[in-house]
Image (cartoon, rainbow, N blue to C red; front, side, top):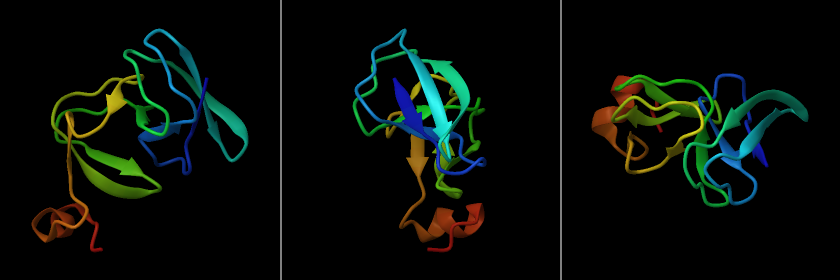
Length: 102
């Protein structure tokens, strides 16, 4: 199983095929393996997997941009989605506070 991380700052990567809890996921950055994480739950194709530990309220980073805040501690291997992050894209009240002025 592989997941694509686009920048070293990213705390998540995108899985390139459906992943089952217990699968070893190879995290690839610029064509090189940079980490391995064990999926802690099923993750559908195209969804985000945590690649760096994030504490509650930590900024979630994808494509070197903050995309939201962790609603709880998120361990490497976990699915990162609407159930455990609060998105800040398109939210002026959060975007300015967390560096995403788009």
